[in-house]
Amino acid sequence: MTSFRFYFIALILLILSGCETAYKLKIDGPKKISYGESLQFEVKEENDQSIDSVSFYINGTEITSEGTTVQLDSKSVGIGKHALSAVSFYPGKAKTLNWSFEILANRAPSVYTYKIINTYPHDTKAYTQGLEYYKGYLYETTGRRGQSSLRKIDIKTGKVLQQYDLAKDYFGEGMTIYNDTIFWLTWQAKKGFVFDLKSFKKLKEFNYNQSKEGWGLTHNNSELIKSDGTSKVWFLDPTTQKEKRFIQVYTNKYGLNDLNELELIGDQLYANKYQQNAVVIIDVNTGMVTGVANLTGLKKEVEKTQKLVPEDEVLNGIAYDKENNRLFVTGKNWNTLFEIELIKKQ
Image (cartoon, rainbow, N blue to C red; front, side, top):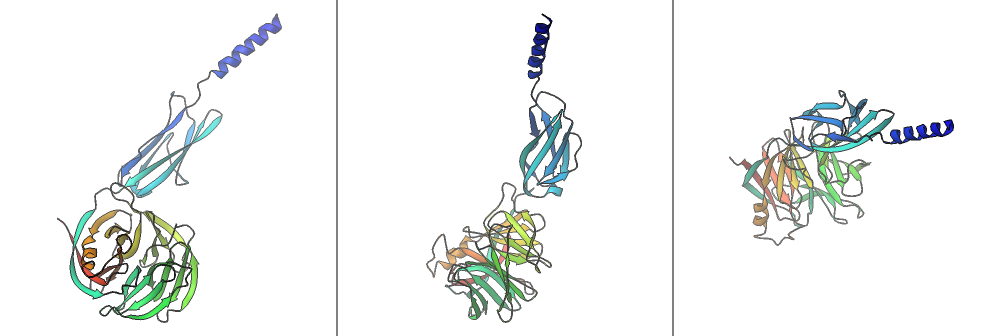
């Protein structure tokens, strides 16, 4: 009888222990927020059971938290999409919860129109990928396998003064000139090339292993700036060509991808939006889209004298003459290089 009673009590205790309420953890916080607003995330237990502690991580980096809550200034995180992880500790166990959120631009971009100042001839065989004004000349890289080239051009005549043809295996993309050295990307080979400005002699090759592809290229005073077809813009060390960091490009509604040819003017990054015949203007420090210029009218202007392939021979190519404050744009296989002035709508 005593033995039966012991086993009966043990069975009751086992049943009772199995009836303990399971922990149901969740993250409470925003999915989207505007740049400059405060962020708060909290781990909660749906049945109000106690949580010992929580460790929070944003994009894999631990951040300071208080109890089960973390508060942040969104400016310290940066514009774009981010991953949040919360490792929650509770009696005898731990559980990781994952969350994602986006920080959007805090205002809509300004809208620009344009005025044509001058027009110049452009080679209709140039499938323009990169364009840059440097010391009185226009430098251009063209794309397509078997047709990719690096060129030095007389602006007034459109005449090619010097040319280097890329190996047929590569699809040439954007380029920039930094310290009298040319840096040139390829599309999907994850490889770039470095050339001597004067001789067009190839000096070295480099790889980019973090960014997705090679699209546009420009530079600031200390870094190369590269787009890769996504909403990310990468910053590279010009000496080693290693990717150091990136920003994400966002409007007040969504991330912006397909950023093609690039040109940095002051602290504003000008980028062609591929296949949309538009230029977007981006704050290079934050990734916020500050302006949009619809240049579809330039393509229509070209089509008055030239037949274009609608979805292929689109606006691409931005160059800036800082000394004379001249902005040049063209397109893939267009017969015209335009000097334009962008005008902000009121």
